[in-house]
Image 1 (cartoon, rainbow, N blue to C red):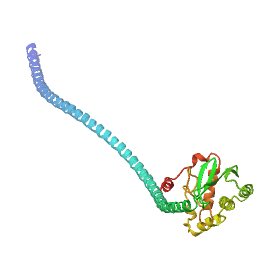
Image 2 (cartoon, one colour):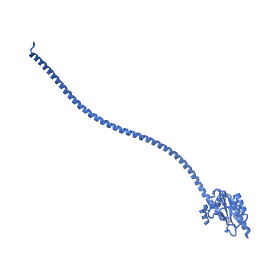
Image 3 (spheres, rainbow, N blue to C red):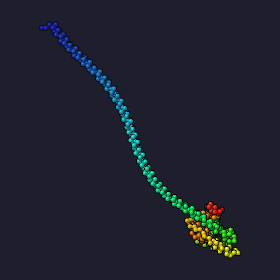
Image 4 (tube, rainbow, N blue to C red):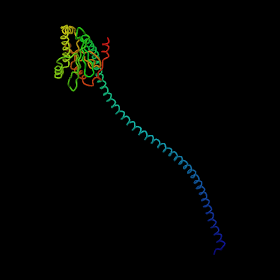
Length: 307
């Protein structure tokens, strides 16, 4: 049987081996832990670096997002601007079309107005020529017949050159046209058959004939009451021997009748081309009540009278 010492030595040897194994294992574990710690430290450094890179990346991402947001805002603004520009272009195109249509319309109006202006200028030139012709005729009537018309209450017709012994002696009558009826207001000298003549005038409305007949009546009255029985015939022959200027209907102007003061008109047969309807209409306007205020005298006639 083994001794306790041997058993103890064996136990000691066994325990020593276990301690050596444990020591070697611990040493290996320690070396392993050191390596792990070193690896952990290295990984920690790498982790810190990765975190720094990640932060930098996040900053770059934020910056990129900011840039993207700004670009998107610019893009949206550009899209809006393009849409607004397109709308403006369409509006301008519509405005251009409208302006072109107006231009064509105005061109047509200008063309019409130009034609009307040319026609008006032609009429104006014709009117000037006709007015000169009218003044010539009026001057001739004044010189030969001494015939004057004056507006007021009614119209006063005055004749001279009736009595050859006193050519400046005036013979006159005044008629009024009211409510489509003629009436004789005065007659100097008095004549017979005036009622019949007024009645005929109202029936025929031929004022020219009435004026001619009245002048003839004045001549007859002078011939009957004068010592020179041929005075009327002499006057008539004197009138017929002078050639009256021809005046067309279109040449009769507002200076022909309806003046406030005296001017001259030819009522006789010698000028058959006078615009009788026009003058008749003007005489009726002057004969109507209240017409005195509308009657005016032509400055050219006044100049002719003064000369």
